[in-house]
Image (cartoon, rainbow, N blue to C red; front, side, top):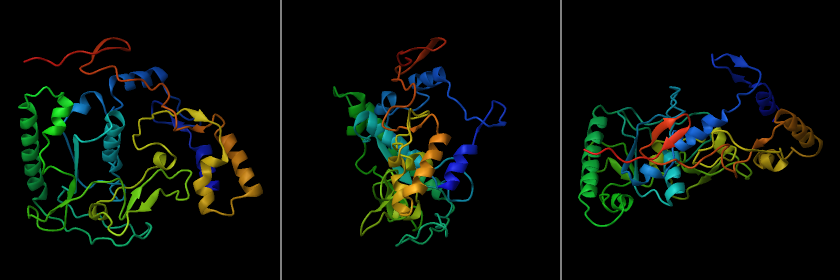
Length: 317
């Protein structure tokens, strides 16, 4: 707790030139409004609700050692936004492990998980085989959708015409292109044999629960990791840029208390008092929308002036 308090007390921010500042960065409220209204902060409805999506992930995650910013949780965030906006993500299919490189090797410093599948060997040519499979699948999906002459909405037509064999899964440890190389399995936001839940305020602050007797084979080879805002209670949708605030309370740190039974009495009271100093304006209240969060202004937008967005029509041939 002392390290957490010290970090947040001194973290500061950066100015427009990237120089460190003692004060945290404050949001531009008008900028936030425009970002939400224009769809720059991706919304799961609008045009995305009627789009056929094949979400293909290579292998990038925060544990590969490469420091890549294309983290795996973003793929699940897209799916969560679709579900929040439309009540389903039936127009979204996810494939994992299409890269040529070897599958993830478990971090020796991570919590032990068993069973863990052995690392997948690297194969040259896997990406080409997978991309060919993807192109064929999308061609069949889009062709069937375009040829749907019923009165169904475009969103309904996209879901109805999704090929039956185009399903969630990952590419495994066998020879690329072999019949058993594709593992049919729902893709879930989780680690080796776990799925992530909101960690804050629970008895499991790491945010994981076991999947049971048959852990995910795909997650064993291509695990995702959680991220700080999720652990702090933000929904997986992740559409909050600047949160609304609430006063610090002991309930915000129930997860920490569960793992640290000695955090009681005078020690806890002193830490909470210090937290209230560090977070004088309050801490994030993820039960509320983001600051200045706005509805999407529409699709095929035209900018007619500063902050003025007008919904339009698709371009005609």
